[in-house]
Length: 133
Image (cartoon, rainbow, N blue to C red):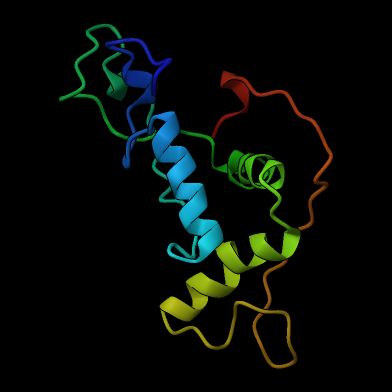
């Protein structure tokens, strides 16, 4: 948040982008188990709803496109802090399913529903306006 200029409504989201101390604290709470899930409330906003020309945060929609970057962005930060793929599976899958009582998912086991993600944790990609959805 420290590098976001005043009136830059393209960055408005909920919850808001946090400063470095808050981000560090959130990671610490996650690693300690105080927070046990990571999730996304995907709410993209077309540019006209962001009120870019006026910089009016009260009128701007609070969503950001980029759902496809949730996993790689989380992994980049988490792995730099020493987290494992197993930690990621816990935070993104098992714990959220357990919290909402979905006993038939959240783990790869016989009899459970399975949604798989196949991804290369070392892949690099370029981002840009034309790649956001």
